[in-house]
Length: 622
Ligand SMILES: [Zn+2]
Image 1 (cartoon, rainbow, N blue to C red):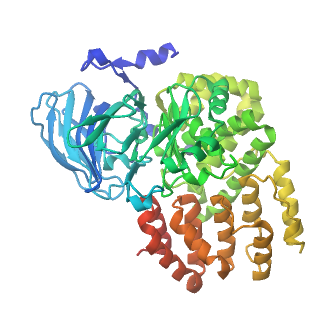
Image 2: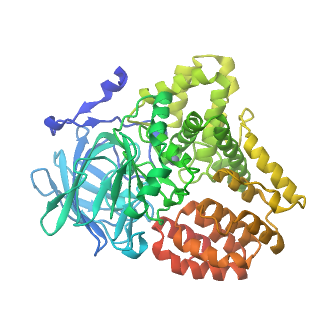
Image 3: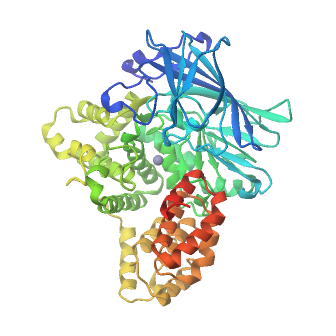
């Protein structure tokens, strides 16, 4: 399926001719230089990672051997890897010959450079283990799981966490194939973001069980992911299914029942799904994100399980990443919008295919509103933080997602859907399994879509969108009738109308968020009670509605919600839903801070390190 230009770039490593691995190209242009890695891939790079690791719940470490295939330029004497707090015992070549190595000074975010003297080696074997508290890993006690009987482990690699448990070149521009044998205590199951070669595992010495995984496509290393726990699997369709703790498996299968249709829709839009299976893993509540697009095995938050499929846009999003992000990947995190903006746009198109134009219009309208809000809130730093191509980690709000998707929608509306879709399908094909930069995307667009049409070039304002701050004048704003109806009810309530006139039957999560997010922040206790009585907000089992409601209640120091708020914050660990509440509590000083500190002290143990860090920053250290 690949074109000739790509085929010419694919080499086979000489090391293992029987198992010739695909080697992806790296980009060497200045804007493709990754500031978040110590690696110097033009000199020597990792092309394949094999892991033979044991998961030790008692010590909270993963340890064993990582064997790396190395592709070195002529004359290169050493290879530089990324590590964060790894305990390294020894490094040898493929034949067991000792290699000299050093670990450089540690940067709190980037970790350390691990420099290995190659001595001509094409394979290096690193014996090591991770430290307890490794940034990528979340160890849960049995009490922190749904089943309360067995421990749980999961990883979150994006953006630069995997160096805390895998010694490799941890940069999205350095794609690597990989394989793993993971040993876990008997009674637990290991799942990874790859083909499962032994889904049931095989018994090994010491009362343990080993699981084997293979990823034959070269992937950016942040996509290597693991989960270990009391996991059960249930199929949804021929290519798809769900892994989760047994207690929520049926609910998850029901909630994500549309996934096969989504895969069909996505393929019809932008070409073949190239990863084999698409399974989903529903994690315990401490998973800090909505979803993570780990190949073959999307990780999802249990806050999606609302019983009405109203949050399946997250599944559409993670599935879309199988093209934008996993197939064509931002070469550096300065171009994160190439992953997230494309995916947000693509997600919207999948949702339209399945549920119609109006449902998609809701998301487009919200994207636009979110973009305007994020640009407005960017404050003094807006000149830097509202560009699409910017400093990694410096973007305001969710502009990678929202400005990125609005940009692509603007191109669609300008050139017409048929032409745009044909272009985008070709784009994914031309750049499959390769890194990409903003400059590379614009060059491809000019070559294959604009083709010298000066009027079109002027109309699109491409460079303004990508390299300049703010919102270009041609931004397309799709408006939703459904949201307009919500806005009308909101206006009537704001004019003094009764809460009972707000008709919420059949509402999607997004309508609730529109209402609750746009109610004026100052409300009397009587009006809050009226809203709660009429709309059942405190009682809601939808984590999104609860979060939006608590946010409003906190802004008004509304005491009746505090017990439910505390229960919520100790149960839900998703960053997006809990950090606004801590921020709100902090803003309420003498009323809010004692609540925030009390609940955080209790909830902390169940949060992921990412969430602990975010809340600690909000509350000003602890
Ligand atoms: Zn995403």
